[in-house]
Image (cartoon, rainbow, N blue to C red; front, side, top):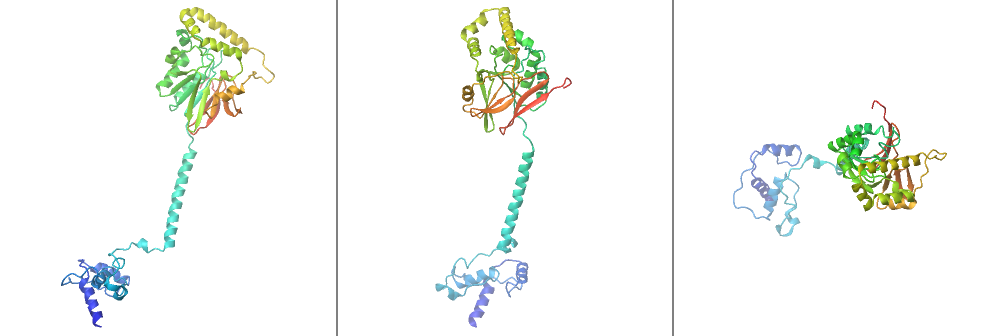
Length: 375
């Protein structure tokens, strides 16, 4: 009986002083946490401070924590209580009173909502098609034997000028550029002006030299704004490495290869420097007439000219790349030859244009369009 009276007095005397204590104690009384919730501030204790590990400290801690269940002194030898039993006063958040199963269900719902938002954003991005970042065209033959050849090409350049800046690669045989002089620049000024306009608007222009631009040089670069490439051009289109060639070296034609070796030789470069333009124009005219005579030869029953593609040259051109894009053959198709993915772009007959559009995800799409007179 005496021990119980002393314990109650110790609880009342050792409770911490918290100023206005009525509201917290009233809330605890509503939760039925203890009978000693009178809403009164206990008096300040008298006498010396108790020892840290004594039973009196434990009783005070228990009172401060809202009269939590406490262990009897006999449960711990020596009168020492573990720190877990002497926990500091803390306020429990209402969320902590939930059942563990309810908390798991809430977390699962939050993850489900987050996944749904992520899937919706991915579908929204997938529904928006990527704008082409690469355009490939060639075999326009401006100023060639056919008066209507490449008639739609200037209109196509005007159409590109209205689009956001991208990269344009011309894979050869764009002009009949037999002499790198002022006459050739004046003859093709209509197209050269449009190419310069694209370069001014931020387009990147590249020209892979074909068999009609073998002698092209600085005059063509300055007049068109294009960067010339002699053999090939590699373009990284996302995860796909695209190799762009003209296509003349993919065919089996020993005579043509001998002609290319002569034109690209050092003596022929000195011939151009030493001989007058009139003589060079006559030689270029003879070459144009010879080329036109070859095109007027009878074609097979299928209507397509016979082309002898060299399988070994295609395999050599496809090393260290994923796709090979070529022209020169005036056909548009995509096939796998010798394990190489080969794309032929096609030519520009009359008012019809054919080109390739590439996006940053590595896709290459063949496009054909007919340009009317009012476009």
